[in-house]
Length: 129
Image 1 (cartoon, helix red, strand yellow):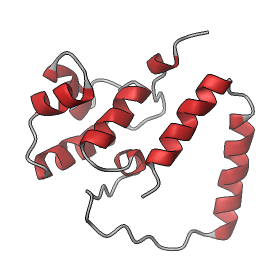
Image 2: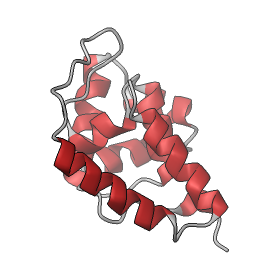
Image 3: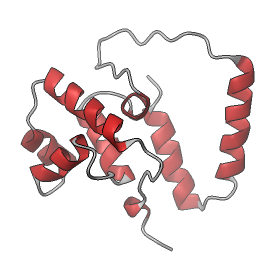
């Protein structure tokens, strides 16, 4: 089985993800080098390529970027990133859409290995404020 740290977000909208990473990084006054060092990637150019939408980050890299930027991974994936300290108030979710999403997630999770489930759980937990 492949090492789970190499899984990528193949359906990720990389340009928007990258823009969100750049926007939050600049808001925090961090350089690409500082983010790269904190994330543990060898080159600041990796962060630059992610920000420009030229590289899809590995799952572990995306989670680490979100942690360094002090936002949830979901905020970087879906937009409207809020740094720590900002209001995280959300509108109540539509019950029907929520049930459908839960069902889809459960169906997909049943096809994952234990290792993949652990990564999925970590990703989901990082989305919770």
